[in-house]
Length: 112
Length: 112
Image 1 (cartoon, helix red, strand yellow):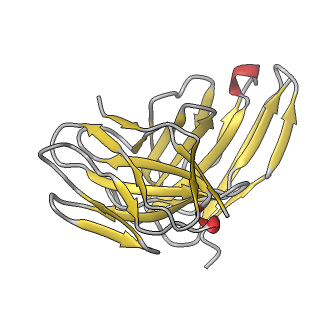
Image 2 (tube, chains in turn yellow, purple):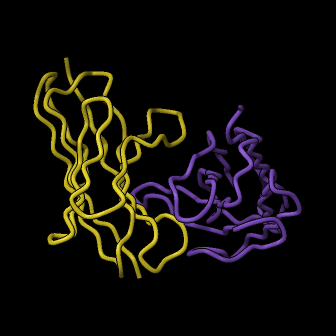
Image 3 (cartoon, helix red, strand yellow):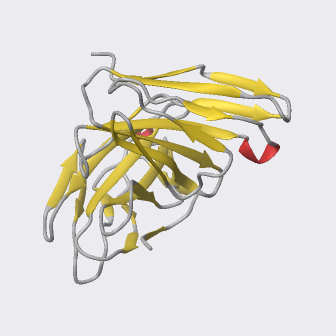
């Protein structure tokens, strides 16, 4: 079946630091890839997505590129802000499974 | 549009009690699903529906029932609650599968 592996936190950075959260996946075929963000006490919001190889998803300064050869979808941001503190989930859709398959989530803490 | 709505926000049950978690969407989405979120586990698919009158099991269906009598509503029923069902439950929908899913705000359930 499908699986998603992402670095577990908490990850603590200073404001304006560079962020990378690694995500790799296992699936059959060509799944769609997503990053969701969950702010404290809230539901999940779609941050960005990519639906085919070499696509780059971007939103709010975050980027991730669909790398089929390495089955990866790493999340990056050049300069993080305190307001980026949240839990980030990598997820895949399709690839032989029903519904989204999520990673365990990465808790990101940005200190001023 | 209200998007995906869930009620209640919080619920405490005793072991053996039954209850229904409500989910509704006003986007005319065909696909709806239920996930549970547990610490360190990410989100896992419970049940899903590809349209009115059609439901199917996800990764962790035991102890839960669903029905889909209308496009808008997708209730999740716990027939006899157990402490292992203590979790945060999220409902999600999308226009059709596989596309990005929109999540509700969640229901935090505690079973004593």
